[in-house]
Amino acid sequence: MTSTPRTWVVGETVTAALMNTEIRDQFNSIFGAWTSYTPTWTASTTNPVLGNGTLIGRYLKVGMTCTTQINLVTGSTTTYGAGNYSWALPFTSANAGCTYIGHAHLLAGPRWIGQFVISPASSTASPFFPSNSTTTTTVFMQPTVPVTLAAGHQLRITIQYETAS
Image (cartoon, rainbow, N blue to C red):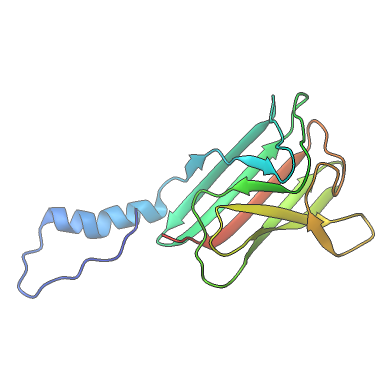
């Protein structure tokens, strides 16, 4: 809800309604509850199917800054598709000439620590993880990278980025 502050005019009468809109409502949106959304999970070749897994997302948007969390828990009927994975963002990222980097954790036996990368002007983003346990370079997350996904594996993503609007 946060928006650009109002420009006041000299001699204007300040009313309770104006104060509520310009001050109370703005603070309520900053300190309010996060908003839930369902991020779409796709892959570059064949899309996965969630089945009985869970996929939840939530965000808090203040001005043009969006903090987003995505949590995936795979189920026994989840199918993993093929190709590089992406998840839908709640808002398109700004075209500010920079790439936004967030955190990605995959709990699949050991915990894999990676990054969540949003390109400029994007509505989706992808996690990157080390391709195996002996390298520090990263690659797109796929059904078998960094490990073969199975029921009960969890992906946790957190990122903060500038939105396009």
